Each structure stands twice: as C-alpha cells, then as structure tokens.
Length: 578
Image (cartoon, rainbow, N blue to C red; front, side):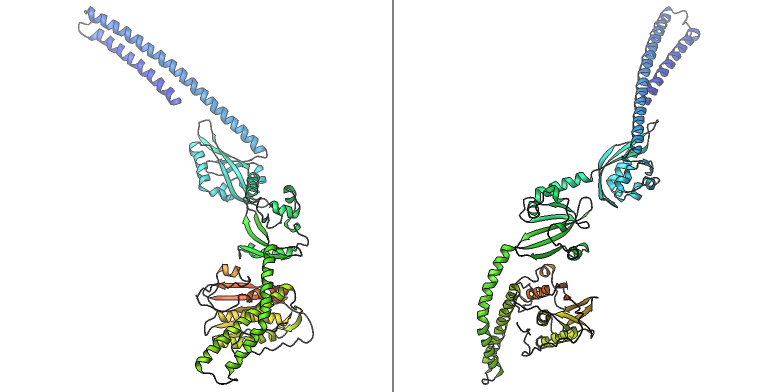
C-alpha cells in the first residue's frame, strides 16, 4: 500500500515537470524562434495548446492528488488495524502468560523469551528452565519435522499453524497429548519478530476416545477382558463379562484394582508371573486357575496406552467345559489303559525271555522280529504307564508326600538310572559338582520321574557323541536343576505348547523320535505339586535347557536313601509307581 502511494506521488510530480518543460519550450520559441511573433496562426495554435496542456496538467495533478490522498488514507487505516491487532495479541499474550494457560514466546532464533506457569502443570517443566533455551533442547517431541516447519513458517512468512503434539513424557502424568497453535507476532514495521505458542491439554480427551473404542470393540466378547495399569494395578476398563463376574458397574470398576477382582489375590505371585513381560522376555504370560467351581485360563499381555502408561491386558477364558471333556476322555483312556497294562506286561516279559535265549536259540530272522516286537511292546507299556500316572495326578490319587533327600545322591542316581539308555544312543551323561550338604524336601519317586523324563528327552534329541549335562546352581534359598543338550533346539511356538497332553512338536532337524507325548505334561504336573515350574531356554541349532527350582529342605538329621532302579541295558528307566 505504501508503495502505491509513492508511485502516485511520483506520477504527479512527473506531469508537473512535463508541463513546466512544455511552457518553457513555448516561451523560448516566442522570444527566439524567427517569425514566431509575427505569425498570428502559430501564436493562436500555441495559445490553444498551452491552455489545453495547462488544463490537462492541472486535471492530472488534481486526480493524482486525490488518488494519493485516498491511497494514503487506506494505508493509514491498514497500519492502524495492524497496530491494533498487534496490541490485541500483546494484550492476549500478557493475559495468557499471567494466567494458568500453557503458553510461551519464541524469538527469531527459536529461543524461549517468556513462558507461563501453565507449562509446568502440563509438561512438568518450570518456566524458568525454559527461558533462554530452544524447545527442542528441553522438549524432545519438538524435534519432529512438521513442528520445525510450522515454527519456521511462522517466523519467515507469518503463517499461523495449529496441530496436535504427542509423545512428551512427564514425571507424574505419563505421555502428554496437546493441541498447539502457532501465532506470529508482528512489530510496527510489519515484520515478524516473535512467535506465540498456545498449548491445550488433550490427553484426557484422547484417553476417553480410546476407552470408547475399547468399549465398542470388546464390550460384547464372551471372554472376560481386564485392562489395568502395570504399576498401580488400577483398572482402566472391564468388559461386560468381566463386570458381571465382579459385580461392578462401569464407573465402580475404575475405582478398583485388579487385585480386588478375586479373593486372596497374591500380589507377589502376580508380580513374579508378569515379571517376564516387563523385562520384555515374553510377549504373553499364561496361567491356568482351578477352583471348586470352574477352571479358567488367563492370558496377559503388556501394552502402552496413548498417554504412555504401561498397561496389562488380561483375557480370561472359562475352560470348565473343555476340562470336563478332557477329563471324560482321559478317564476313558485311563480305564482302557488299566485293562491293557497287565496283558502288555505279560507280553513284554515273554518277549524278553525269548530275546534272552532262555527258551532256546533263535534264528537271525526270528531274533530280528522278536527285537522289533519287544521294542514296540516297551513303547506301548510306557504310554500306558504315562496315561495312568497322569490320571492319578489329576484325580489326586498320587502320593506327593515329601522327605529331605540329599541332592547329590538324587542326581547321581538319575544319571545311573539313565546311563544304559544314553549308551544305547551313544550319548555321554555328565553331572556337575553338587555341594555335599545340599538337601531338598521332595517326593523322591516323583522327582526321579521328572529327571528321567527330562534326561531321556535330552538323550533322544542328541546326536551320537554329544553330551547331556545335568547341572546344579545355588539360588540362595534353594537349588536350580537343569538338563542341557546340544540338539536342534525349539522354536517359540513349540515351547509355548509344552505340557499339552499327547503333544509332540516336529523336530527342526526332521528326524523322527519315539515318545508318548505325555512326558512333559507329567513333568509340569509333578513340579506344580512341588511349588515350582518348568523353565525352557532354547537356541535353534544350539540346543535346549530345561530347568526347575527346588527349595532347600532345611531339615537336620540323616537323609533318606534312594531306591535303586535296575532295568535292562538300553531301556528308558522309570520310577516305581505308587
């Protein structure tokens, strides 16, 4: 606008100059041009020309002057509006800075020159710590390229910007989500010299939107869904099925903790259960809970909320119906197995007599057939015994009384009992050093059964010439016993399915191994009665380690001697059934 006014004034001056110039030329012609004074026609023309030129010049000057006045008036009005706008912004700025609003002012270099106390409430940063710093130095999320561009455009082009800023962690509120408005500040010359930032906290709005989304997606599921904070255990959301179990409304549920959902909730045991999730060692944690009325499976996963809070999401599935079907199936199989056990034992004994030559020398062809029959009868007998063992455990008929036992003698006996089976596969069994005073309170038959299953599995998955190590480590109040092989290893899905009845994962090396698919199921059940769990670590191509912990007995006096196993060379040993 100012430029247009200057151009108009310049045109007026140019027209005036041309008029004076033409008048001067005419005057010079009058006095100096020959014959001009004596030529009436020329004088008449000159007089008319001079009058017309003077009128045109005067009209042009008047028009341009009027245009100049109008343009200049508009310019003054615009400047007045700009100055008024600037004053309004400055007044608003002072109002925001003196109030609880989350605002700050940046200079042309991007440094904070003033900040309100409202920023502390939102970001947890005192305003005094912000002054003299760039926002990128103090608030990492301002390093985002879109925010950098918004601030640069405000400084360079005077552009306004509004958008969402997220991802800033605060000490006590988790991650803050805010809506930010960038307002350029204009000085008297019309230049941008500062930028005003106004932030509005939208964290609760986003959380509410998320809760609404969860409600729409999860509300009608038959599975019970529990969403709660990892640290405080405060409940964020329960779907309808979960609320019905607890007898809570939507609002009431948010006032409780997950530890209040069931009676006698063991917080220490729960923290131990979810510890691998917090340590990022597992993606999920699964536990099966049995009561007098039902059986439920709880799968827990860790997630991060929109506000940065670590959350646990637990889904609870009722397994009562499935357990009833499995129990009925197992009872039927157990009944059949019980009827088969005696005939199988008789067949196995007869085949052993034939194979030993006690009934006469066998021809090579007959001996080969007897060898195959004996091996298969042994396998069938193992399956029957495993089924009966599992049924005894599930029905509560198996004896789990404990006595203090010397750990060194227990492990040495396990090595001795499994040595013939290892020799048959060409595998070396080794036992690590065990302190002489190490004792554990266990049921000797059942723990021998656990060790036998783990050692026989390790032997089966080892190549000829490999070593299987039975190790012991002190864990302060107890001992961790481990069985390590150098086999093909297991993938995560196979590890997750360990313990399911009749489950046999496909070996990664493609070799077929004999087994009942019940050994590790029995192992997990026995360890559960001893208050411990089976842990599995595996590296594909490098082998696996199965381990479990046993508490020290702390009992004085002599330890109980171990029962000896005597079996045919190369047979997989079994502990005595009670």
